[in-house]
Image (cartoon, helix red, strand yellow):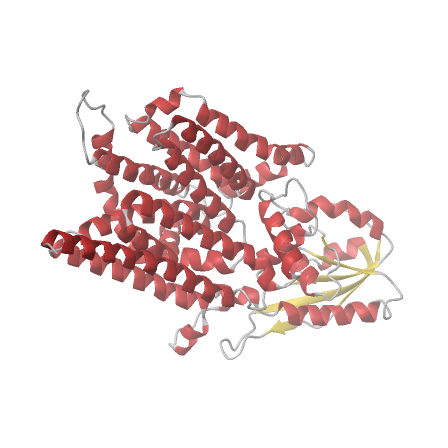
Length: 542
């Protein structure tokens, strides 16, 4: 065997190794997260979206309806339990990793594919998204699927295949828009790439991409119809979230600092810094692909630069737009979560291309990749198992520990059910459940044994999806109710709408040994004689 054939055999074995490593990584991390989703507690948002799934609709107050459809499917298959509610989120994140791997493998090779899968899969972004059921995991999946299909269409050699792929991209984008409205951020990124890439500007003159977007809008038309019959709530809610809030102004750049910190936490600080420092180098790709080549000229590196620019345009514009928004108002860390997959993919391309030639650059690239993976994994572990912080001597305030949101609701429901039984004289009288805030309504609906319909009374709290059902309270006039909240601030309002209000002793919720003080205190009121229907007249905010 010649030295050339030996080199080829080693190369082939190396490729096979990275392929197998990628699939093993995806399988192992998915199995670990499958065990995690069986944790019994539900975060308030998870219970809220589960309650959506019991009343399927074309639209919902907060976002699109896909998360409700997804939870409805998984709970029909696996029953009403925490694992079933979260299964769709896990499948979405695993699916996104598989799409990333296939796209990177096709464009940049097995090493780049493994690097992207490992860095993304070990990040807190994928950890939280896999084990908490919100509308972000489906968005990440469909956003990734859409730009992967768009990329496949852009680089297809057969025009007919490209046109068909564009249509499928439109379908994927439709599901993404039904998941969350930030799916629309893909459009300016795609238009930016088409404008910058000389080889692909022709698509701006073709009907196919616009027809694909027409499919997306057609799929979204049900949400528009629902909003037309519900005061355009969803769009008003989105404007409310992005508007600058009143009250005392925070220190200069406070929102910006919070946003940047949240993004560093989302993907891991080392990977975040690597992506930021790589951005200026990535911008040089524009010069390589923005000018048309003279006829007959062949540039072997042009396709690689063009694909990397495509990934840049699919990620960075959205992150930077939210950065600008954070200069004037609060931006939640998860709003830009969908944009990090293509950014991590581009960083992975740089790492893999530095590693392959060997030398000092390869060594530094390996250390950077390893430190990014380790830092992401460390944050992921601490977020997944908060008791580790306690063992390390770190003491968080109860409000700062997000895992506390999953604790104590079953205990609260047991007490609430006892009060309800006492008031109903063991089922002889109808008693309904009310609260002021979606979290109490949703958690009690899930944890009470009969999963009753619960109602938000909007006692100076912002609107939510329960506003769509508030008119059902007119049927409850004359009945008694159990009210639940974390304060007694609503006492005066309750006495206006009920003839008699009696508060039970406060119910502290402890999480020992991690906290000596209560993580929350629940207040339960026995309300008799519902006499005044107020609807959403007392709500505060949208």
